Length: 370
Ligand SMILES: [Fe+2]
Ligand SMILES: [Fe+2]
Image 1 (cartoon, helix red, strand yellow):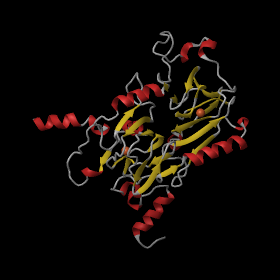
Image 2 (cartoon, rainbow, N blue to C red):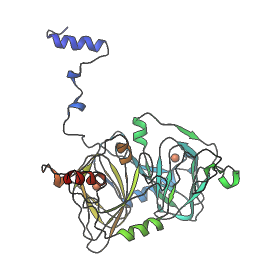
Image 3 (tube, protein in one colour):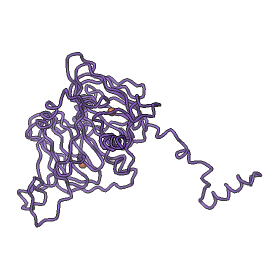
Image 4 (spheres, rainbow, N blue to C red):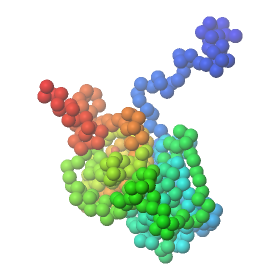
């Protein structure tokens, strides 16, 4: 028994599986906000590509549903950021990644695709050509088939660490390599177009599953050069056409266009991001760490880390694909964004086109007029 009455009391509490809040919980005493989880990291395409080729040699198709190489952040127990896992996957010509489903939401961004490479989602086949985005929302049956004559590679992003932390991981195997296609089985529930049977329950899967690159690129071309956010450049968010909301309940997908020589201003967000370089050469500075990237490299931006992108080429554009856990944070009222140049000024940040402030700015303007 300790001499000090409070220490003795603390010991007594501990025996009752109770603690006094005064004894700890550093988490709640940190008034500086979150510490960025994990480290800024880069995965170079040349290395990953050669490891994928090696995986194709040593990892037979039959051993697992997937031949995925996942990017592990050395500063985290698991995951690329604390909420997301990013990796790259290869399937050889003629191979199938068999049917399964899970509560984890996933998306694929096609790196080396083909018209006859496709993912089946709830009975509907979706082609995966270069730079197409295909979603496999949580609990949708999915399988992948490479019926082309060359290896196919895509980027995978999943909300695995988040679902793990929430202890919400369910997994089910379909038991076959291939699920029946909706047109073959006559079950039309999976028909996820803009017309669906009125007599069936509303499908749980969202309507948008595939975002073809030709549409995305056309929109990017249309807006490239626009006077957009000084922090994000010309940033486009892939949206669910039914709701206008993000691609998945937990994840939002973006394209970012940087003109030659462009350097964005530093900011930080409570969300984390994983990024993939579609084209171009550049540098991203994350809490002082410089990440020099080129085509098809992947990197991550931990939550609440100061960062800014720059296009280091004087002549070529740069295009990034990125995934953010923003919808999750928004749903909980936790999404915040802070531009570095607003620090200490006490003024609302001047962020034209900035997504965090787009909803706030009109209200602020109205108040001024009163
Ligand atoms: Fe899966
Ligand atoms: Fe950013």
